[in-house]
Image 1 (cartoon, each protein chain N blue to C red):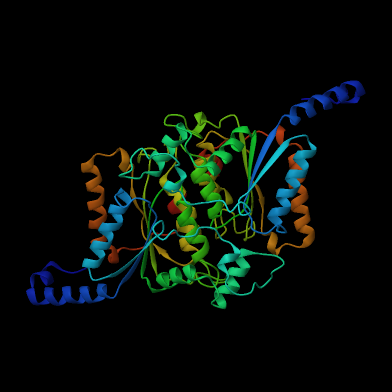
Image 2: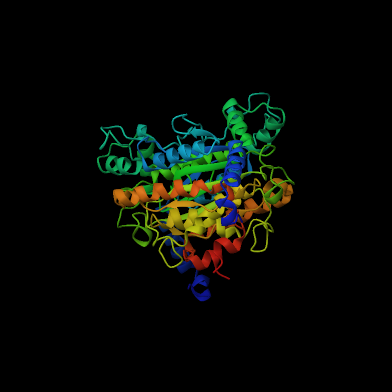
Length: 254
Length: 254
């Protein structure tokens, strides 16, 4: 806690602000962004995140998956060298071996470098079928391979990305009311389980609370602006946030 | 219920068998299959399903997604005619309009025809990140569009595919013990929610119990054979099965 008194001392305040800026200046953020339209609401959320985090002095990198025409299919093309077993193709085994030998295809290696450098990874996407769009699912399937993001052992709390933060920022088609325990689509936390726990936490990420912008398509212009503003506002203090407890109780408890 | 006495009457038994075969002969099954390797365990499960269902007299169609190099990305290429709004691309809106005007790209229409004709859709896949591989996620994102699989209103129990059955047949990397309420990965039903409830049930499908083959890669050859055999055995009486209650309680209850 910073006491009010301390903040009232102009000299101390300046030094504190400087220290804060120096800390944040070193922070690196990767935004993995999955929307086709540059004028979309998702694009606005991505843009304010880039602006706000850059203003803080963070280095922000964006992987714009549709613009990159990112490959979602996990195939043998992902391995550039010889296969470990050409007679029987197991994607998991081959990607693991290729990762160790640095013979994964370049688009995967590029993304892995971005993840490796990031202190915080933000996934920005519209919810498709209670999950990420296929192009972003492909990013998860191909980039977060064994040997890079985890190993056996070396998962969940010992996942290789355990010194990093991750955050899902997503938009829904349905209203917040539908995503409640008594709503037809169930609590929104139910659909977060495979993404936050099964994927991000499995790789070791500390997961920050999700940023869910409900039903922007049926919201008023003012409401949409409010949702964008509240995301920007949250990002101002994002580095002070504590991760959620990534346990079944957070998702399915009362 | 068929009484034992009735079965003991050879004439009646023959007529019953004939009636059963006639009923099943009319049944159509679509298997959407997502594995890269024809000699894989997933391929074995797909093959016995084709064999068993064909022997019953069903018509079985397989969409072999990797062999088809199926496109997972939802982009404007999916709309062959003019866009409803060329200034602002919304995939959901454009796919809906294109579906009504029959101007979706041919690979989507082909898959929709297969789904339309099927009485039962089986999704056969290895679990990737608590979900389907991206290539199969893309099949869901692109094929099950508004106007074809559902409308607003016209979802969940009134989804357009409400006279059909669906079943997930999947393999895991982890053991059954890990997928329990007290296991590190939580109950396996948790990760089924977005797929079975959020996708299949949303489109109206009646969902049959999942067929989960746990950790075939670390099982013995005998255990693997047992898993394939039990899937074939189950399929013998698949048409007598009752769908699961697709409610939060099935997934998250005690």
